[in-house]
Length: 257
Ligand code: URA
Image (cartoon, rainbow, N blue to C red; front, side, top):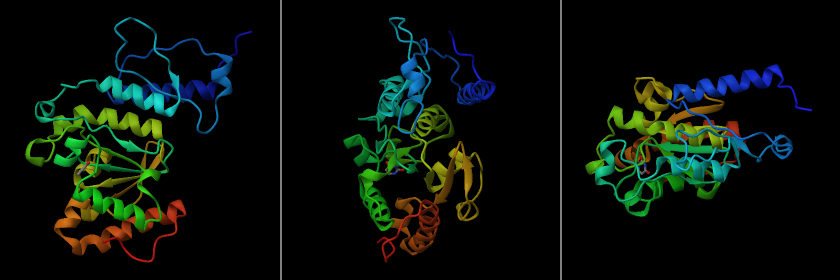
């Protein structure tokens, strides 16, 4: 006997479809829902995902996958991307790294030279400071997930242009949708303004919680900025303490250096 769809599930599905439409994703593929899929509705179990295009062999795509598979599908959708000019100078697409079940996710601006070389976000000097910030929060880098607004290095480390952010950020939004962190920390103006779609100063954006698609979002200074102006580290530490309080984390005694 086919199960009837309860109205709240229908509503949730409609909201999800609208959410993907907002991100510019219009094509959805599904296979018949099995008993096994229905039984898997528990934390850490499969999550629903969508794809931007059908596979070339016409195979229907699954809408239900575990988190690593869902992230892999996003990476496959990105492919050997040439959607914006940033592809011209890149060595590696820097997808994102970390714990797929993380409560805490950091979002930066875009890869620099070291990240482009190694294909991993925040591995240069700014990354070392981010690691210190994470440690000071009583966590390890492996506990969190780290991503960027754009996945290819802008030439000369310039700020990514709006069209580059608009082209790339749907993939970041899909990563967030899969990971579902309790808290997102937006590092710097590019990440904060892109995620929040608010054009305001960092001074005004910091110090508040924002609702972000089921997660809470906090804004703090970018580690690269803190390297240039270390006096602001104590301000960033205040932002991180707000996050720690919410996540019930016990900080180390000392602010990150
Ligand atoms: N700066 C960023 O915004 N992201 C990185 O991955 C590295 C430096």
